Every structure is written in C-alpha cells, then in structure tokens.
Image (cartoon, rainbow, N blue to C red; front, side, top):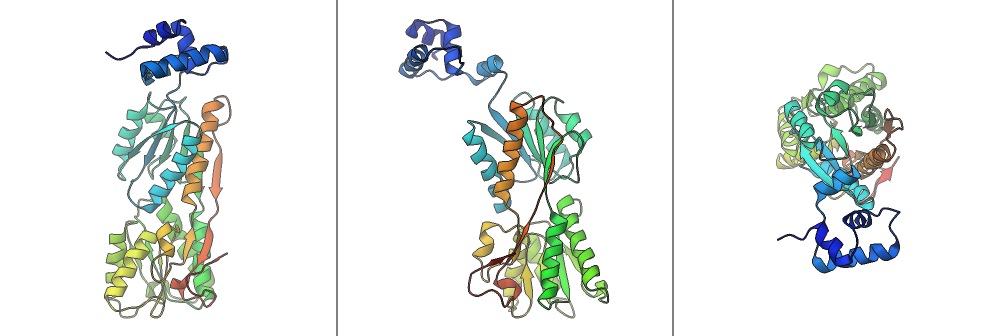
Length: 345
C-alpha cells in the first residue's frame, strides 16, 4: 500500500499537522522538526499527494498555458521562456493547444479551472467576455498578442505593425519597389497588424506606386503555405523585387519553392521574414527578418502571472507592447551584410 502522511508522522514521532507544515515549508516549524520529517519521508519513499496539498495551501503550483498551436520553432521558443521562468519558481506547466479554434480554446480553459493557479493565453478569439465565460473571475490571467487592450486583464503584445513598417522601410531604402507580401491567415490579429503595417508604409513611402501591380498572397503561418505562395508567384507576368513573408516559416517555405524553380535569393529577388526563429540564421542565404524575442515574451508572461498570484490584491490590467528589431542578413541583398553576419538596427 502507498505510504501516507500518517506513516511519516508516526516514523518521525510528530503530529500529522507538523508533517504537513514541514513539507509545505511553513515558518512555524523548527529546523530540527523539518529535518526529522524530511528524513522520515525519504526513508519511507513518501510522495505528497498534490490534490491534498493544494487543499491545504490553496495552490497547485501549476500554470496553465493555452496556445493556438504547439508546432514550430515560434511556439517551442515561447514555451521554453515560460518553462525557464516557471522552473525558477518551482512551478509546473499544463500546456494545451486550441488548434486555432474558439471552441477548442474554450474547452481547454474550462478543463484547467481548479487545476492551475493562473493561465497564460494566446488566442485570436480572446476578449474580456471570452475569458470571463470560461474561467473564474478570481483566477490570474495574462494574455499574449491579443487584439488591443482587454479590459481587466494583463496583456503582452508584439508591435506587429511597427515591425512590418520598419521592414518595408528597409526594403524601400535598399532600392526595392515591387514588394509583395505573403500575409498570414485573415482571422488572425497578428497577421492583420503586419499586413496593415505593410500596406500603410508602402502607401506612405511609395505614393506614386500602384498597389495593384503587386498582389498580397495569403498564407497560414506554415512552411507549406509559404511554399504554395512561392509557386503561385512564379505564374505572375513579372516577379516582385522583394517578398515580405509575415513570418519566417512561410519565408522558408517560399525559399524552397523559389529554389526549385531555379530562382536565387537575393540575386533574382529579395526575401525577408518576421519573428527571427533560430533557424532563420542557418538557412542559405541567412534570412533578413524582424526579431521577436519569443523566449523573453514567455519569461515576461510567466513573471507577470506569478506577480498576480503572489499579490492577489494588486492590479491586473497592465498592458505591455514589446518592441521588435530589424535584423539584416544576406537574403535581402543588402550591401551592408557580408558572409553570415548580421546587422541589427
């Protein structure tokens, strides 16, 4: 039979309450008593029951994370940042994917209620009513990359518009005029902000240029959709000077399609992305992109959530916008870059 807390109390010759307080690091327990309890627990191979522990401490030491997907370097780097910060605090993660579906996101959130101390959510469907409909009002929440400030909840968002604007400006300054964009999915707020930054900056910097001369192709933030876009642009009467993919995964897929067609980047056209996933610097040619520090975003999200958990009376409505950074590599044809080095501005 499994060893119980009563067995530990008997072996240490202390009360069950003393064992509980010692295992939960309560300050009222002396160091001698704590040592006796820990030694007895070790000798008996006692494993505390997490459910019972959470009843006594009102904590599960578990953080819920709901993301649109778990595939790809962007999400793996984001989870890594969350995990590093969680481990530093002795917290564990319960991770789920919504697969880009509102119903799945709602089901994932409801399943976490009562099992986690707080939740980090990234979903294009999230607003205040969505969160309140699916989670207790007292549960700490941090939202990632939502469409604007969500009243009553802390949020972190990347400056998607500004990052796209800086990239377009760089391409124009390096002599490109016919710039095509491979945009993300239409129902995704991040994708729409990047597309808005592209269109408005093109109109501002190239007012005499007819935007109808270069199409905007839609992708799905995947390599496959970037590959299909790369195939589609080959059917155009005239290739663009440059292609701005709304994320690096689509840029990599597009590069593969262009290579298959015998087109070379940047000799025949420039190619740039967004996110600066680790792979971006190791493809050939290395990819010019907009750097989003995914690991830092995950770390900040966890730290913000931990602050809410530890300070339940504090404010929850803190909105942060995280700035991006242009990273210039060889794929844009910039003369400033040599070899595999990079220039971050």
